[in-house]
Length: 72
Image (cartoon, rainbow, N blue to C red; front, side, top):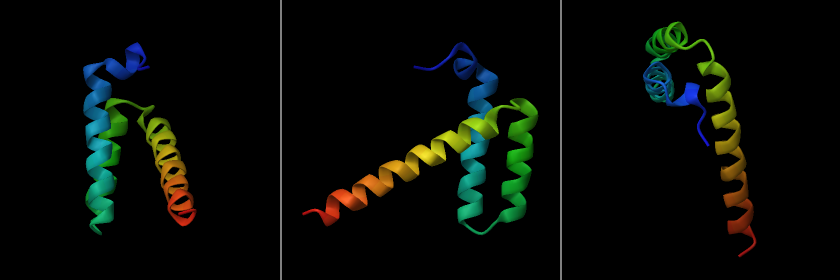
């Protein structure tokens, strides 16, 4: 369940920028990724913590999918 903070327009904008930063990093654009992260953090200083939690959850789900597919 999203908190009031997570529903705020500022948080949503920062989250979108952080997602774009991840895409840029994956494409090899480290400088652009850093710029986007800094912009996101200037809007919502807590965005880094959330993105870290999301990355851990994504990794957990990916690991589970690999385990499940190897059990077949």
